[in-house]
Image (cartoon, rainbow, N blue to C red; front, side, top):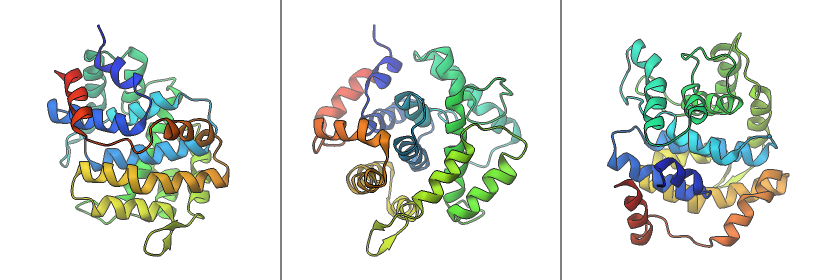
Amino acid sequence: METFADYILGEKEISAKLEITYYLAKKRDIFFDKSVVFKTEIARIFLNYVPLDLDKNLILTACLLCNCKKIDVAQELDQLKSFAKNGAEYLFSIGFDKRFCKICEEVNRYSNSNPREKESDVLELVDQFGGMLLDRPERIGMQPEEALVLLEYRNLKDKYNRYLHSFIEFINELQELQYKEKVEIPPLKALVNLYREAEDDKRFITALVYEFEPQIDELLAKKGGTQYAKNDKVLAKENPNRPLFSEETTKKVMGHLI
């Protein structure tokens, strides 16, 4: 019998994964909001541009689910230390294997796992960096340059993350590109604007898939994103104008979640 894990891992298209996770959150008590989508998009474009020997499908699925038991309020320290572990246990209960669950649990360092899974290092980078770009009740979102400095010299000081310098180099190169909005602006600023303007998760996902991703993928392809050329470009040709949140796909997803 197909498990939920089989279902979402078997779906290779990121827009479909976003739909599946959106409906899972509606059906089950898990954390999923625009910030999860935002961070997953940063992971997607990082993996598209930087040729790492990693399973992109697995990492993007983990990005969507690693914070599934996070609480969307100011957390006590024990909650901060336990939500990733609680999430890993939940993911195991819906069919994910132990390694996938370990990857998700290692999104932060509270598990004290040693050695860490290499995929977890990508989750850690996008979770921390992406979070710093977004507005919080106590502060406004940081500029990417400031977030990179804090990521390297505060958050990950004295910690080994095998992809840190590749990620920093990628973000610096990304900031040199010009995304065409009303005026030309760096892509991360455009992504933050899209996040702020979207009224809810569904609108943000739709805007991301139809507005942001086509343009950023074209920019990355021109700059030489090898992973993009091999993967997403082929998927785009196979699924032209795929309707998000259509009645057909909604029924299909919900059928797997009953």
